[in-house]
Length: 301
Image 1 (cartoon, rainbow, N blue to C red):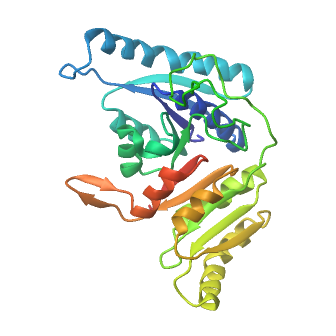
Image 2 (image 1 turned 30 degrees about the vertical axis):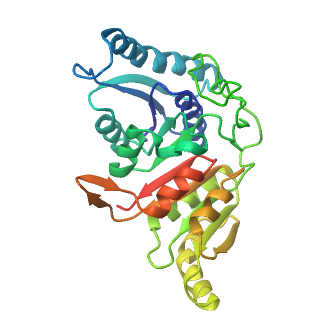
Image 3 (image 1 turned 120 degrees about the horizontal axis):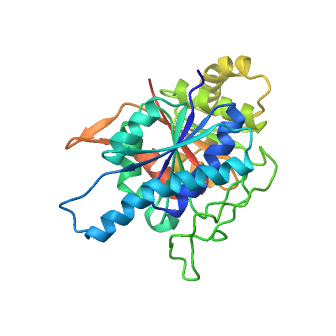
């Protein structure tokens, strides 16, 4: 049985964008699409009873309504919607374990808070054992033709506000209009991230931009990079690759390369824990705070 592409839906505008991104990804992978929401009652929170009930109703209604919209746009795609009850990061990680990948919509991003502005997104990325793709509202998307600030999620002041469920991202632009970008640490390259990036580029008939830091003589870097990529060239001969050496600031180069990209892929290495909380690394954190494209964080097995 083919594992699904799963989208974790929450109460942000980016959640609907993530659902449409997930539908396109599921179509590319010839896989089912699974929309899930995770809800947990907060008896001791500051939220009022009415707020808790509204959140509970939302968690039931929005995935079902979004699934109905997506079925009309992707009539051949198998789509399911369900609500999970329990702590959202735990429920999303459990759903990710059963999937090819997990996409999460993140709202209220802009330049102020970045992709990890939400605690659920941060916790899920830190511990999930499958690739997690973060999709923001109002982000530029080469595959969907969504311009920054063009979606219903921003008002004239630039502040985000929830939009109607029926207001879907604009579907436009050819598939593969933007490249897939992957960051490579030549000292310890992530085979999982490279495999995910080559597959994503192949599915989209897109170019793959490989960005790596420079810490050695250029000739040595070039030799290490070619040795690292050689197996993937053989496995994906259809993927055109462009290589770029980032001098000094690979995080900035990766984030800038994300402008107009279909996807940016980052590897997640050994997780370091501080006070029981897993960390994703300074470079990944910096890219996630700056990047304008959907970002896939791929853990090592």
